[in-house]
Length: 360
Image (tube, rainbow, N blue to C red):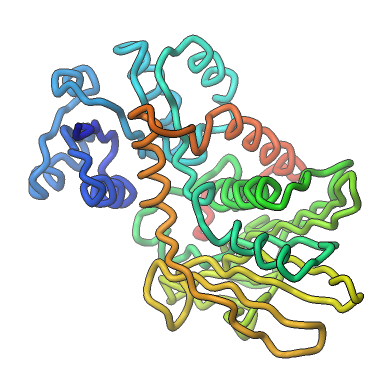
């Protein structure tokens, strides 16, 4: 049976979602976005001015991809219209100030809700855990970095997260990768005590304060974890053979990212190794191609494999399976709210990560 989707929001992410759903055979039955209705109609999609009107299209599920601060309002509206509606909501699930409201909405909702956090469905994380296991490594250190230069995005009209700043864009990705690595490797990757948190305050005219963050902590079993993100293009952990040099991504480059998962440990003979997964896009490779590389301490990087990793398409396929009763929830909202609470706690180490009027 073909699933039918009501898409709420038809900005850049909405158009990407529509393309991914249609590629999977899901019908976009209606688009709800009065601001971009003309664009949706020109793309051949039916348009409704409100969610109440969209109900008439009888969608099997709703995909909410409006800006984060509007998520709670759309959830409340859809849940009020249909107490059993299935929904997928773009990450982060809501603004930190709306978490209590959203928890209450979901507690009384009879439908299935999936968070659109595609890094829960990336194959790279499991590949890194598998390679480290095959090498027999006792992992001592784990690094996740998700950095890019957002200047071009902002000037193109993409939203700014004024609640969590850098953590609002890439923070959910960091924690999704961390959670999936923990599940794949069979370890607890979460902090045993208060982490050390450092904000990026670079002495440069184009860099706003608090435009990046580094979080370091140790787990209960002694695993050292480092998490990092920057929306000003600074790379804190230049890991793997694809790491940018110099360690700042150029503002004019709209495609390059530094999104990596790296582990460091020793094998049974005591030799030190690094295993690094580089999430797509990878410079010099087609889009949706990712890599896993290894090196012995002091040696050169050696490619292990290149993997196809259209994580968003895979996440949507798993979501469709869940809505059809054929698989588990790939990204439950309760876990997303727990992750959001952690990100909010880290962000409160400073009054503001991305002040009003910032351009990056």
